[in-house]
Length: 141
Image (cartoon, rainbow, N blue to C red; front, top):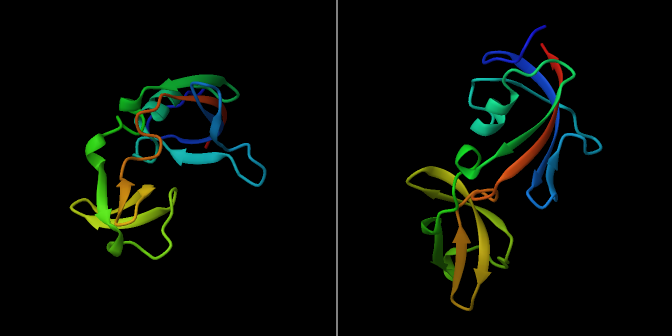
């Protein structure tokens, strides 16, 4: 029986949850298709890809991913305060904006809006979180 290995094109259904069981993403959401990707090309977070290795078609697996194998640790140094005059009008908490810096274009999330400044966070929204994925391997194509 064929097993998942690097270079294989896989088709999977998945549900991503936090440790408390709340769902943050799922291919099973109405209108979505199963995820299809070639392993080993850096399209998936490392822990997710490693968790798929060795699976066979029809197999279900729970993959637990620590931050270091997911979206990284949460880094306080990626939170910064910017003068409100450099922000779009009407900016509010939760807005996701694009910023250009040393690492190119990145997304930042607005965390606080004060009278004169805005606090933004360049961490990935899933940084610092342990992730739990329920995965079903549908096909190796």
